[in-house]
Image (tube, rainbow, N blue to C red; front, side, top):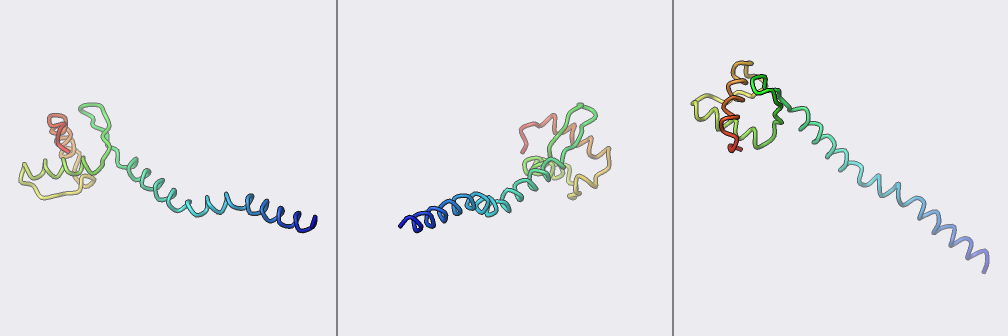
Length: 101
């Protein structure tokens, strides 16, 4: 009976020691995905020279930018591809219209 008890208790101990790494491995892809999404958001940050501040580009900023272009009857151009003068004009408008997003 004593050897069975040791065998069973060894199995439970091994399972208890191996479970946390197995659980962590199961959640790793989700955590990696969240980390990559956060990095993408951080990479889309723009400096506004006139107002001396930074703007984070997110869905709300993208909607405001599209609204800005529509008001001016301009075709959509990705903000990254707009020239500095066009970008600065947008930031000027954005500071005058902070509620658009």
